[in-house]
Length: 221
Image 1 (cartoon, rainbow, N blue to C red):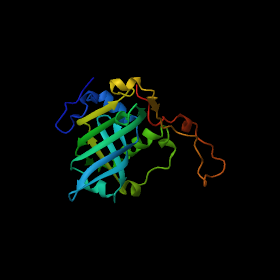
Image 2: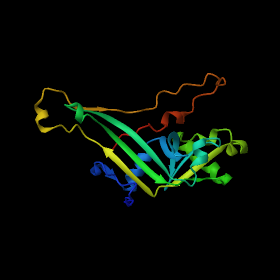
Image 3: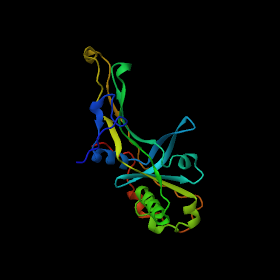
Image 4: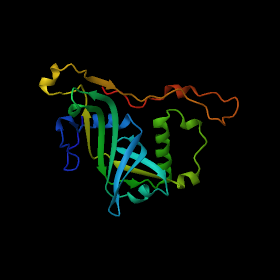
């Protein structure tokens, strides 16, 4: 199991026992979600932009319009990309010890623009297949105009850490005798039943693979 060496930026300082630096854990958390937040500084003003992402091997990718301020500003500049999953609400016997069970990853690096047309096309295919397995082959092909209008960024996963909280509340010892309910309220996010587009042409059946899409927010092991 390969692990990353913590750096001054990636080392978890607050509650370090929750830290994970092994790539199996980091990749599992990344692969369980679709939305990240990209933090960066532009003209001394910090911004945090939510966007869709995906992972291919040791790289994380995201994309958007070529007119995007974030996508135009961050290539070759330092960013912090964060992914977080909410797994449960932790209900304690005091307000101070209420908490949240979560899994999170922070990745530091300098993203690069994917300029090669073939590589960009392949990356976008991976993005669609990541969220909608089996969908790409049945779609209208991407046009060169669409490729030109889309910016794709990639960043190696070389400086990163995961942080995870699991389990129940941790109360002060005397509080365990209080007549107050405490425990965990699990939280999940799942795909619901697909709804057809209002302008769907007559006679088009729902593809069977729509019923096999992976559930968002995979339960922690």
